[in-house]
Image (tube, rainbow, N blue to C red; front, side, top):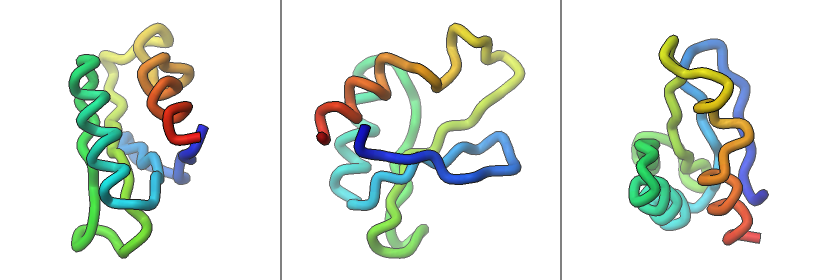
Length: 80
C-alpha cells in the first residue's frame, strides 16, 4: 500500500510514509474523507520518517478501526 505501521505500545499508531510532503497530502486527503489523522514531520521526527498519527480509543469498533479502512487503502494505492 505504500506505507507501514510502526510498532506501538500506546494508543497512538504511527503510519510511516517517509516523505514530509507525502504525509501532508495523505493527511489532507484523509481529512476531506472525514478522518482526522495529522501528519507528523520534521522537526518533530527525523527526516524521511514522516508519518500519519492515528489514535485508537475505546470508542473505536471493528467497523471504525484503521484496518482495513477504505480511506487508508485508497490513499495508499494512490502512492503505488
